[in-house]
Image (cartoon, rainbow, N blue to C red):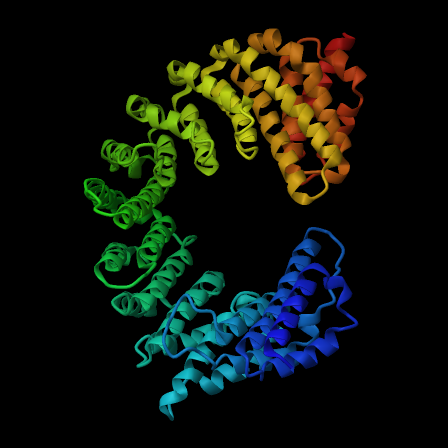
Length: 640
């Protein structure tokens, strides 16, 4: 028959597996026989779609396994586990059908088979190891003919594919025994073997390295590992990208070790990665090397231990110098302009990682940090394009607020215009969401120091809530921002209650209506997002205002708030722990602050029942106990 028909038929089967998995049991045997034929089809598209079918089956069964962990019924037919002994050899046979020239953008049969093998490993777990390892052992060192590179690469690829899924302890000895060989294979004569070896090392470091006791890498071998990887950064760009990945995962594996054995190489590793990040611009061809190098630097910084804090602080100067250098460039083309912005975003990402690490290391580490030079550089990034609000720079500012605390106030005159601009970028809704998060960070840092900026900010937020064109994804976070501002400025927030209360009540009514008609998980996720943020806003006001102000100004809204919590308590089928947590908190806040609220609690008998129920939920017991105590006290005051 026509190969195009065969390919299209497999495409249909892929869709069936994706949408009608439950109807497959009667047909899976026949489909497997067709799979055997497809693996030898002269038309590669047929084979690729057959592989996609089994990838889809594995993906569906993995998702079902996650649902089972959440307490849902096991609806899996376990096709992958039952067919493992027959399916895996078919997949392994395709791994030697590689392209001879590396092209990262080309999808081929070998990569499709590897993807199916990886997904099968996440489902089948330990049993897949015994099926794959004989293939790996037989082929990973083959060097009899010039074409044997295919077997070395395929065997390395196969081992890398089965590292996510099986128990790390089951893989540990295999990884230990193979580590020396893989380090040597980074110097293989074939670039594809080197590329896959670097990727495989990264997978070992990601899924096995940090899980073993004793460690995967003995202390005396770590120097060889680090130096071998750093030397391989000089290799071809597509290989160096995988080496960056391996370095990042090697460092991450030591994130819980203090002091980290990586500390002694921190400066050398970061220096080489910074050097590598410049290669993409200097060498011809398309490459992600800059992105991968900066991602690795972020991981190395984030995973460093406290004894490296002084070196992390010194890195700030290097990064600030690079930011200032790139800001001053004048792009001569659209491509150069985009490259400049991409580099600045990556540098801002490193800045965030540095600040976050120094903040977690404590006051001593923070003293060596030059916040002024960092903020000056970030303001320069904000200023380098009109109408552009770089998200990574905004996130770096958010991190800086934690490190500087109230001292951040001195940066507000320069930063405020960009905060305002970010909040107004509602069409770029992700930028707006990030800026709303940073608004909360600034409020927490400044407290009442934020008062001078509140009138303008509140007007912007109110306009965005009223604007029907503002994406709905943004509006829940705007509501939560009211709570952040209230906590920061205290009783100064009273003047804004007329602006805040109507949209909060309107949003609550809308969420009640949406919950009654929600037909899928996405719609219910949005309802729960609304619920969380509405409750956060009220909680912020209860906790930000003084008790006297709460009693005077929030009392008129208390009955509606409790009614709203009642609708949440009644919606058992859409229960969400985050929503329950906030509802419990708001009930306790109201009970602790509103005079005479016990009368309302007498009428609303659900309150105690709800709190006692929440007390049985993981993570809610302490807060529920506190809220119950406050409610009981309010009821006692009513009776006395």
